[in-house]
Image (tube, rainbow, N blue to C red; front, side, top):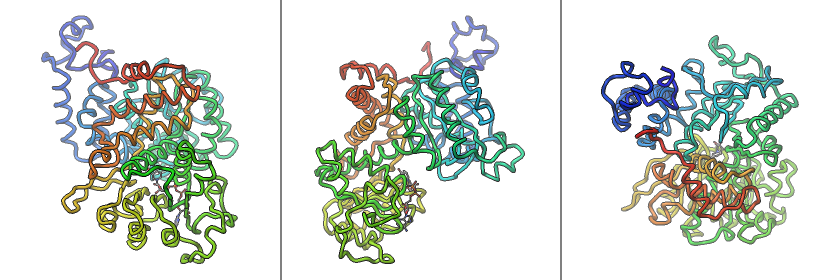
Length: 544
Ligand code: NAI
C-alpha cells in the first residue's frame, strides 16, 4: 500500500505482473495491466468531464499527488491545453481557494513564528536533495495581490513547469511559502484560512526573517537554485540585490520577465534584419517592469559594442509625468539611468500637462521599438501607431501590460493600423489575426519560455550563481529559435509543444555563459549538451 500511496513510485494499474508479485500488489489492483498510454487516455477522459477550470486544476493536482509520471505524461501530451490550467491563469483561482481545495501536503510552510528554528523545519523536507526551490511570501500573487499561505499554489504550479518543460526531476523540486501573515481581510475573516492570522511583518523584522531563511537554505541546501516568486515590489529587488552574489538564486518576476521580453524583441529585430544597437526604444511606463526590461536591453547593447552611455541614450522611458529627463527631481535611481539630457528635448512640443508625452516623443524621434508596461489600456492610439509606422518599415510594437483590459493596444488594431507591417508581441493572449491572405500569430510574452530552461541550465552545468550574462544568453537563444525567422506570419516566440527542445538549447547556452563568467566548471559544449540531455527528465515508468 505504501507504494500505491507514493506518487513518485506509484504506477497504479500499470504495475506489471512481476512487480505485482514482488511488492504484494495482487488483489489490490484491477487485474488488467494498462500501458501508460492507456492510463493517459483514461485520465484525459476524466479530465474532460470536469465542468470548469478550477475543477480541472483540482483534478490535475490530485493526479499529481497520486501518480507523478502519469500526471506529467498527461500534461506533456496536452501541453497547450493544460499549461493554463496548472499554471496561469487558473492557478490564481487555486491560490484564492487554497484552503478550500487543499487535499494533501506538498511543499513546505515556514512561518515567521518559527523563525528561530528554520533549519530544523528544513530538516523535515520530503527528500534530502533538491535542484530547485521556488519560494513566495504570497504578497503579490499574479494580479490578485496578497493571498497569504494560499500563495503556495504558485510555487507548486511553477515547479510543475520546471519539470514538464525543463525536465527537472519532480522529486528534486521544493515549493515553499514563507508565512509572514496576510493583510487580506477576506483571508483573515475566512474561518477556514489556515495561515498565520496576523498582519504582515514588514520593515527590518521582515528582512531579518528573510536573512534567517536564506541562512538556513545555505546551511541545508547550499547547491539548490533558489527562485524568488511573487514578492511585492519593495521587497523583490532588495532581496535579489542582497543575495544574488551569495548563492544560486534569481527572481523570475524581475529577471525572467525581462529575459522573455528581450528574447521576443531580439527575435523581432532579427526579422527586420537590423542590429540591436541601431534601435531607438520607447517604453511607455517606467515602473519596475519597464526598468527591468530596459536594463537587460542595455546590457545586450553593450555586448554589441556600445558604451553604457551610448546605449542609455537610445531609450525613451515615459511615465505619468512624461518622458524621463535630467531636469526631473522625482526619479528613483533605477529611472535616473534612463533620464535623457534635458537639452535633448528642449523646444519639443508638450501636449500632456506641459509634459513631453508619448505622442510628442514618437513625433520627434524615429522610434523603432515601442513597448507598453504602463497598465494603461488603449494608450497606443491610432495616431501614435500610424506616425511610428510612417517612418519605418517594420515597427516593433509590444503592448505588454496585463490583463487584456490593460493592454496598451489590441494586436488586431496594431496589425491593421500598420498595414500588416508591425511585429507584435503582447502580455495578454490574443487570437491569431487574419490579415489579407495571411494569418498572423501573436506571441505572448510568458515567463515559461525562460525559467524552466534556466533551471535546467544551472542544474546541468552545476552553476554556482545566476549572472546577467546567463539571462542574456537565455534570451538570445530564445530569439534564435523564433518561428518568425522562417515564416513571417508565425509567432515571434516558439509554440509550447516545441519548448522542451528549446529549453535544452537555452540550457546549453546558459551553461556556456556560466563557464565564461567563472561560475561553473569548464566543459566543452558537447559535454555540456550531453549533461543537459541526461538531466532533462521524461515521464516514463521505471520498468517499461
Ligand atoms: P508599475 O506600477 O511599477 O509601473 C507602471 C508605470 O506606468 C509607472 O511608471 C507609471 O508612472 C506608468 N503609468 C501609469 N499611468 C500612466 C499614464 N497615464 N501615462 C504614462 N505612464 C503611466 O507596474 P509594473 O510592475 O512595472 O507593471 C506594469 C505592467 O506591465 C502591468 O500591467 C504588468 O502586468 C505588466 N507586466 C507584463 C509583463 C509581461 O511580460 N507581459 C511582465 C511584467 C509586467
